[in-house]
Length: 105
Image 1 (cartoon, helix red, strand yellow):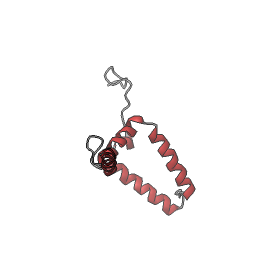
Image 2: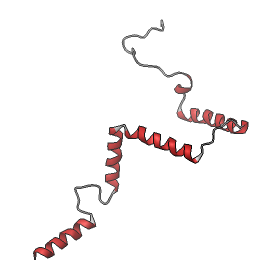
Image 3: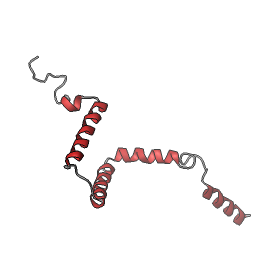
């Protein structure tokens, strides 16, 4: 192997080192680093304001992915009162229909 990319893998990056490890191994190593930083006193501790700002930025970044947001909306719809528009399980709708029928009759 010459190290040159061939036609089949051109443009793709291969993971190496830390990125090539399985997630459990990465988590274990990162956890050790975090504990060491806290013991040494060099770990960053977020203030409430910093945490709030980080959360705001993360929310903005996630919301830019329209496919992801659409999936979240679909999941929320499945969880709410009967799973969407197909069934009329909304109590308010039933009450409104009954009231309209009473006015007509």
